Image 1 (cartoon, rainbow, N blue to C red):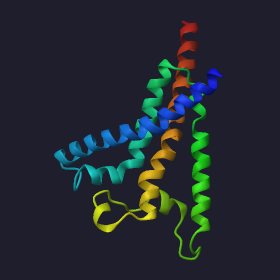
Image 2: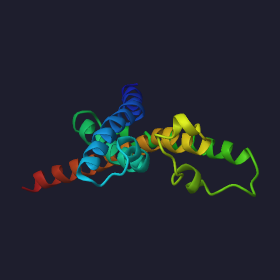
Image 3: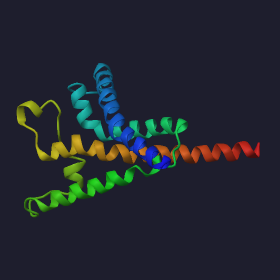
Image 4: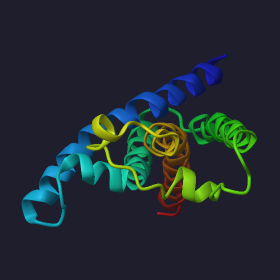
Length: 165
């Protein structure tokens, strides 16, 4: 029961806190990048271009920090529901439309050219929804699990090092 509640807590953190922190940090990082001259059109553009990298970094770092305080045993497994949800979405994507004129899964879900600024004017296409809305919710638990596993390995290493000293 206790490990089930811990799993649900870690899953909620991965699904809610990581994307929200990514939006906040993406805006701040985009403003800084624009200020120093390495970003083109602003924070929204920066977020669109780097959302998957940002969500991966923030998910792993947040998991490492959270698992320093809470047990990381169940946090390592929060990737499973996300991967199942992604498999269902890919199967649904394959079942709609023509297979002849379809790009690859990577092209549709990961490398699609989507811009946050153009949503109001150009509309919101399915590949942009999948890249900018779905993929952060899929990648956040995966990155969270990686951060929890890293914290677990380093904690074991520290304990073994402390015993030898």
